[in-house]
Image 1 (cartoon, rainbow, N blue to C red):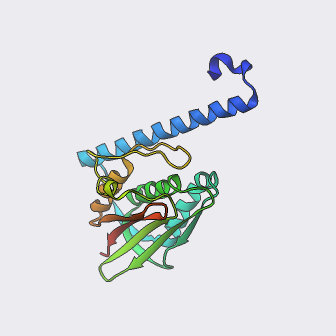
Image 2 (cartoon, rainbow, N blue to C red):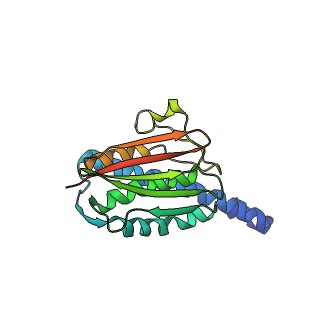
Image 3 (cartoon, rainbow, N blue to C red):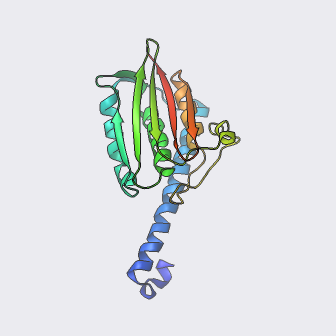
Length: 200
């Protein structure tokens, strides 16, 4: 439409069309990226290189990368990771896990809400949680969230689209570390996605 009729549109209409293009391209890119990561994992060609990571600093960097998305809905992402907490994890896989879970929290939160990234440590593992004040998840859908064969793609509070693959990929990447992932959620109150990383 822009290519053939740009002179016929006013600035407001051009902005509307540009927003549609942006959302479509973003969703398509995320789908391709998720599929490539999953395919590489299935082939065994995804390199797994765990290293010591200062988690609070790492999470702060990831929050900065998400600020543009969060600001569109005036959502605050709060880093409540314990200071000086060190984990052993693959940076690329951990980035994908945090980005997917945080993006989902933003997607399913209404404007002017808060998202918290939290941690808790035991002798054997570290629990990392992404807690939102969003719309929550119906109980019958929770058991299907982390599977490829029954993945669910739902529109966000601003009609954002997803690929339906992100949580299944998170599960595989968490399990690659020897951890687990689970969710607690209440409709209209929010969700908390938690994953564990073993202490080695």
